[in-house]
Length: 294
Image 1 (cartoon, rainbow, N blue to C red):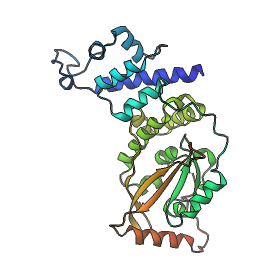
Image 2 (cartoon, rainbow, N blue to C red):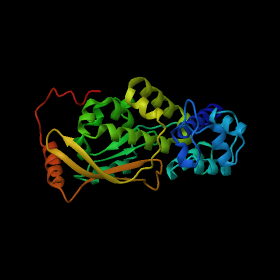
Image 3 (cartoon, rainbow, N blue to C red):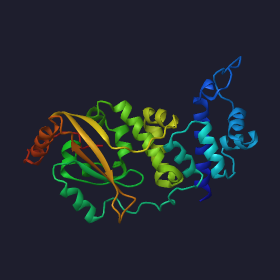
Image 4 (cartoon, rainbow, N blue to C red):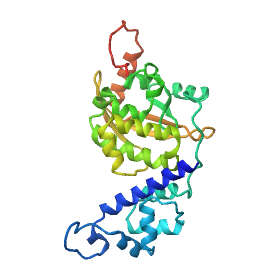
């Protein structure tokens, strides 16, 4: 437990430092200063504006073993101009209004009734992810959109891992550069106090070593909450698919998230998606297609 809390303190300190360095002095009503870093807001200025001692705030940025109050974090959130998602993130790192750390995932598949629900969404790509974004279930329509995840080793069957390591998925997402960073920001916001847990830390460390793009996104410390929105996929068979994606949580398995894609009705995506799913269901001759390989 101490290693997890130490990881969260370090993460809180790095996040506060990153956000302070992104501030513009004029936005806080501070005068310009001469010399190096003329636009950077200093620690003592953040502490003064937040009503926190310079020493205490410095220790926070350094990740020292101190326990900030909710009031202190609320004040810092106001000074640092944090968004609601970012404010909630630093609160969760400090142990306020955050879910309890979860045990190491003991399964690699969605419960049978959740899998049946996914399969019942005939024609709509859908999958289920665990808190660490391991993909535990999917339906035939998602296989048609992406690929058969059963052919992916269980250790690699993770949404964040696939986004940054699968060339085919990168081609499927024409806005990959933007969306990959958004996924990192959403993952970080949701992970919160779980970041020190083995399944989360292993994933992050593995991605830091495997992908320079992930490393840059992770070090930006961006935070963003999930929101249903339109997505564009450029499929090699049926072309552009404009889909809206939604995320639901089963009440009896609240740690699972079901992600469901529906076609945008104002486009020709409903017809394209029906054709894609229909072609996927037809018997096909054996192929040497390497998409299913990791």
